Length: 288
Picture 1 (cartoon, rainbow, N blue to C red):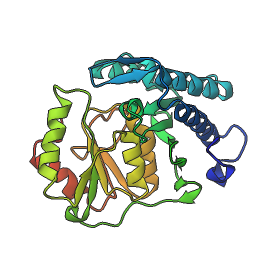
Picture 2 (cartoon, rainbow, N blue to C red):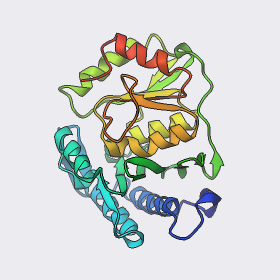
Picture 3 (cartoon, rainbow, N blue to C red):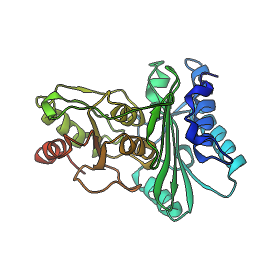
């Protein structure tokens, strides 16, 4: 396994630790996914021709579900591969489980297109919400063995060491990330407006192909901010907690508070946030 015991923050140790289970599930899934890089057997499309899925995505989610239910059989799980494709289906699936006392929110392979092309940037994202509030968030990037971990009120960590958001104070100093949504009809045009508007106003833009990893990078100070239109709860939940616990800010693209129902997300170190979302709104790139 690529994960050492040193990766697990000491605060997670204890009987039936939610955080320890999330770390274990992410590590095991990530190790298996990495072993399949360049060796998947079946490639299919979901919502659009740009929305890819392999047997590795599905196998990783089964592995994660099994491990979670071994420890917490009564908990609900919302996983990407267990939901029908498309925005309406994901909204309906969240609605059905949003009242659960404990809800695990799982993206077993965030960055499937990268995985398919053997481009080594993808992640496993696992969050736990209690009565709608995210209390545990884990994002694991297996190719560099980077485990990002947050627990509500206890900070955010990378390889067991505390992380903080960046210290840039203006958009012009900022490295900002976004994505290219699989919804080419509505979400992508809105995101492209944002790219056109922000590119001359920031230090530079980045697109890695994994929203969860972008959020983890904001939490660890590698990125100053991130936005994307038309995401799902499993893309955002773990990374949002990482950023909040690392001292940053997560809202919708209009500045409203983050919740599991947010699809258009903006995240930053907090200092640039108002300038950031203001630029998106001025460009009419804040929503669909």
